[in-house]
Amino acid sequence: MEKLLTKTQTIERRGVFDKTLKKRFELAFECKDSKEKKSILVIGLNPASDTIEVLDTTTTYILNHFLSMGYSTITIWNLYADIFKKLKPSIVKDNEENLEYLKEILKRNYDTILLGYGNTFLHNKLVNAEKEKLCTLLKNERGKMKDLVDEERKYERIRTLHPLMAGRYFPNKWVLRDYPLEDERKEVKKK
Image 1: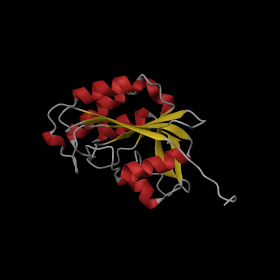
Image 2: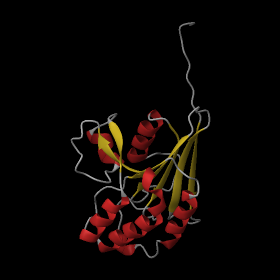
Image 3: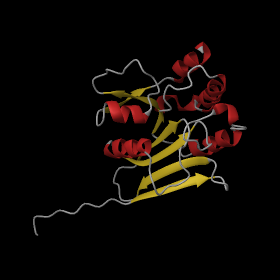
Image 4: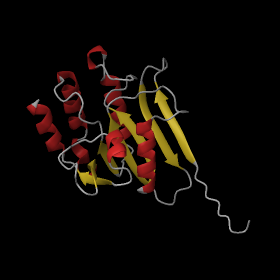
C-alpha cells in the first residue's frame, strides 16, 4: 500500500436564489486549499436548476476546465436569473434585480470575465436589450473580458461560445482569447 497516493481538494459550492427558488443570481465554487488564487466570472444565459447538489452538464464542463486552468474561484452569473430549462425571454417580467446583483459581483474584482452565453436568440430584441445593458455594466472591465476558442482555432469565427458547445466539440482544448466589448456592441446593434 505504500505506493498509493491520495489527492484531495475541498470545493465549496454556494448558490444565491430568490426566496421562491424561481431565480438564481449566482452559483459559485471556491477551492479552499488551492495555492493559486485566480478568479473567473462566467456569464451564461440562464440557470436551468434551483439546486446546488446536482450539477448540469454546462456547470460540469466549466468546473473541469477552469479548475485545470488554475482558477480557484469560479462564479457563474447569467444574463437572466429566471430558472428555465429553455429560456423564454418574452415571459421574463423584470431583469433589473439581476443586473443590480451583477454590480455587486463585479466589486469582487475578478481576474477574468468570460462571455459564454452562446449564440441563441441572436435576433431577439429582448435578449439584445439585456446584452446592451450588460455591455454598459462591463465597460470598466475591458482588459478582463474573454471568450472561448479551441486550441486549433477551428471555431474562431464564433464569439461568446457557450461552454456546453466547447465541452462537446473540443474538450480539454479550451483557450481564452481577448474579447473587446465593442465587438459585442456591434453584434447587438446589427441585429
